[in-house]
Image (cartoon, rainbow, N blue to C red):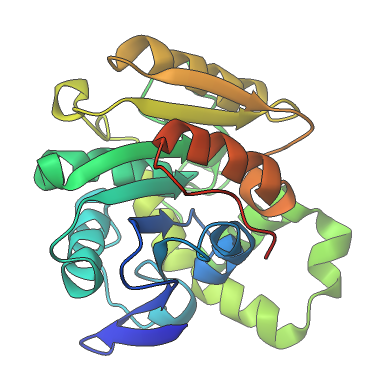
Length: 268
């Protein structure tokens, strides 16, 4: 496994054999590339797997922004140009990372060999709940000034108060520092559709957890209906962090979708 950066700002990790199929895994909001490590270890025995810390998160926390979908797509393409420049790539996106990989299909075109997403938010749709929007405004409906507080509210809602309070002070401080990225990308995602279905030329596997939120499970079904050749699939027993909690089941479904000969799930 090797690490590198683009201009010292966007940090990435590469593992697996150089001659294996190219895979890139993109993490979601308030996460980082290490959050996708368990999933990566299920496939990097036979594939060349690239993960990177998105702008504003983890080792890429120093990125000044803007924290937009377009900016994240630019970073994804730069990382692929650095590590997988001359080969097709299989894209996997978790949560907001799913929106990033779907949006990237417009620029990458025939470089994309397959797409798998796990519970990407469809925040621009009229039926999407207002929970994420509530992070972007204060109690009086004004745009939030304290993005650190927004990040903390997001994390408390995600992992629970008890678990948040048990985190080391340094970890809590680092997560609050990622609030600029969180608020920026969530606000941007609500302004317009993240992708045009016409730009996605490969079949998409839209996963969700059987114990996930109703709107995330509906999103998988919506993607199945709007994208040509797309298929929705529930991972039994999983919630929103299925790629981390159920890496074997997610990897098995993923690799079945890829259909790459000789690529089987490892037990990393």
